Length: 396
Figure 1 (cartoon, rainbow, N blue to C red):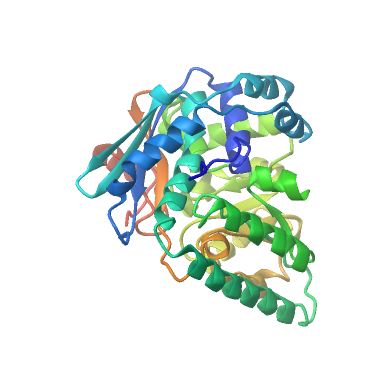
Figure 2 (cartoon, one colour):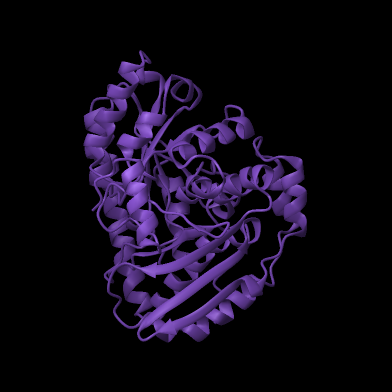
């Protein structure tokens, strides 16, 4: 079997942007990440342990090529010292361990944050691809192509509708939960060829480079979570994280993630200063219509024209759901839609719902308090309760 990981460039763009920001602001930080499967797999993931070990050995043998680093240097927000660091970077096998607990697969990464934060996306698509290799590959791809063509036809039919104030644009966010690397490649190539008016980029930096697409992404939960352990008052961690981001990127990468401790607590911190500096907001949990209405009302209270801002939706999207949200908001603000699993793993076989989250930083617990039941993750219930109290979060 050929290795799953083709290149160290094949990860989400926001891994590089968070990596650079944290290398510059907190280069000595340490972190711990834990893998979890949130749904019931068709067979025990513990059976994959030896294969995962082999794939991690391969991952830790790879380095960025000179051509790959030069591609990253060409992105105006990537700084020269970070690119220089990547020319030397190699994942260290000692920082990641694989074990089993009955039928469950356990993967734990622990070490300097700038060395372990990159493991996440690779671990997730390694487990996914190994898992689905045990199914009928030919049957899966035949049905996946049928479903992809249905999405294309649905969007072509939508193209006949009267035009709205803002265009419909969507992106591929599916690297972490894809069926396979080959299928992901085919999906992106097909969408770029068949729907250039709608398909505007991919979070997969390797495929963005390969197909000359825009790499998409800014920040994920781990970036803001880490600030819960960086010595600022807990109540101020979001403001500290957003301020460091502004100073790092000076107007680039201006989409802020809103649900680390819930949308309400985020908006309490997202004052006029940040609302003017950031281009928009990303939704990743909770009711998307309710979230969007809250965001637009917040901009209105700050006397900011929401048509100058952007709402990006990325939570469990399908094409019909994205079109529904577009029709609801299109005349009031600019929109973007990041579709993941339902682009790159829409087959007859149920997708895995797997995550690998930052659970401790600098020896302290950190947590995410999502607006959707089941998406929160923390290994310390006492800290989770304290976080809920500080931010008046109702819990799940």
